[in-house]
Length: 304
Picture 1 (tube, one colour):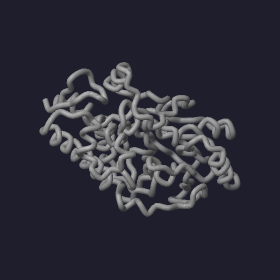
Picture 2 (cartoon, rainbow, N blue to C red; picture 1 turned 120 degrees about the vertical axis):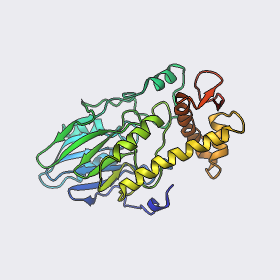
Picture 3 (tube, rainbow, N blue to C red; picture 1 turned 45 degrees about the vertical axis):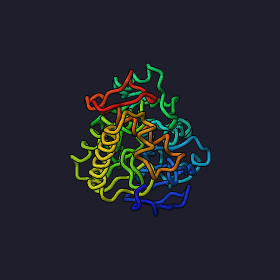
Picture 4 (cartoon, rainbow, N blue to C red; picture 1 turned 90 degrees about the vertical axis):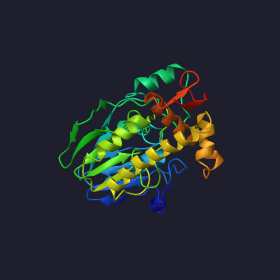
């Protein structure tokens, strides 16, 4: 966790204005992976776009609906990615309001050939919680735009944390989902997490001078350029730690995680190992490491 964002402690289940025409409702699903809970955003004055409705929680659904002010209607439901803390409430909300659901695609959309091969070998990840039933009404691609009477948003493809991850740009602000957050670095867990894609997405975001990011969890990011730059440096540093550790001897992702994540609680070492695995896949395809057999979570990796 990053100390700057740890003081975030908003009221749960209550709409709070966080920017002009933007309100945030924190869902009641706090956990080590979701921090205080999923941030659901309501954007607009009259036509309301709901970004990341959150988990399938009837209480949170009621909160969203009861947060509408006079003459406001939910017209769009936007989903950054299909983890179970972001997308399951989209369909119940659509059924209640008649609004359409917009996203990159269902779970698995956008996966690289490397990750498809990994799945074909039998690896299905660490159970971070994919919403395998999620299907949007409309699929979005990089550069697409959505409009209403009082807002306009453009779509930026930001895979890495998840293969179907996108972000929504509203003027000089960005709804960054789980790609960029202030309280923690993003989880990158294969086969839906891809370090190669994550780095490309970070560098893409650096091309624009943003004022603020509204993340999927935690407080707004008020220093977007600095934060994205940090995330890139963090990943490069982690890569260097892995390569340094492999100078001693070949190792599995879990063995490397135990060497590198020395201050991480035992309960989170599995997640740390999947992060390491994501780096090893990237390093393998950059010809910097090799493994004793086909790419897998339980095999040993060595410097090439």
